[in-house]
Image (tube, rainbow, N blue to C red; front, side, top):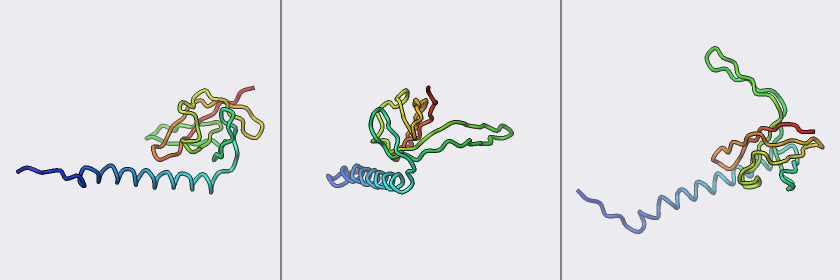
Length: 116
């Protein structure tokens, strides 16, 4: 048994992926637009962010892991391509991005380290 790929069949998957990426990008913009609580200066550029400086605990079996320190989420497109080490100013406090984790759907979570 053999199958013949038609022009429609070869274009359907890329179009579907592009449509999914467009939906994800619109959702990410809506999330930041509605939930952003600060404007951060990231590498000299004003960026709307969801800022949080509370501790987070996560339990894995009997082990409890606590992540402390300030962090924010922003649109991936509004951050430098390699954000680790980039200077950030939020509410007059200076930080460096210690770690950046893109979620694959248009938002990147950045862990910060306070600097003097």
